Length: 269
Image (cartoon, rainbow, N blue to C red):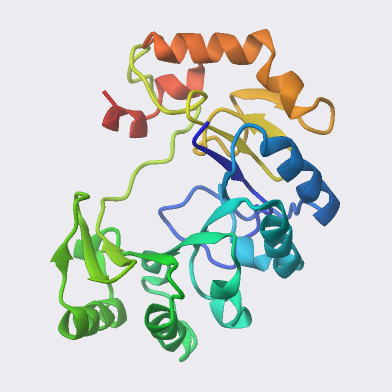
């Protein structure tokens, strides 16, 4: 498995219009996170602390980073960036491999004066960590984001990267432009029952209620394959239910109702 998404909280301090409703109030405990990381490691060492929610809201976030350091697991952190100033030592953690900052999250939202100063400092002192600045929905940026984007371009220039819509600012620092995607909803019309995806095959997700699902775009676990409060991850991944999902997706058969309605999977042929 290439990566596992672990939602340490579904709570968020913003209310972005492009995001599915993430105003939950669930937080995994530190002991749960410790246990789940230990169960995940035999299958995958690459963790995304994200499905919904803002991970930096977790009151024990520093201790979670230390757990990842101790277990020698790699972390990709996705954040809206509004709480980064609380964690001045973030880039020193050995587990942190990549920091993705969704700048589009602050579109039409007032932020503290130090928001961009904090990001600028991270860019200049990234400690060999990868930083990805995400500017999605490029045609609809408000004035503050337009100004910041222009300042970045003036200072660094944008060197075309090997990835589509991605540009290099400096070593290990990139800026990405992509279109927003529509979060799949079980009430959406069916698109097709044929197709494929990386879900189940290359990744799984564990939400803040301990439900294990096959996809990071399934925060409400419509495609649940088990709950870690009731079964071990080993039992879940050895279950007939999970194996059947892998077989179906591998054969381009979409038997799960959410998958049939997902437009994001159309990116995968």
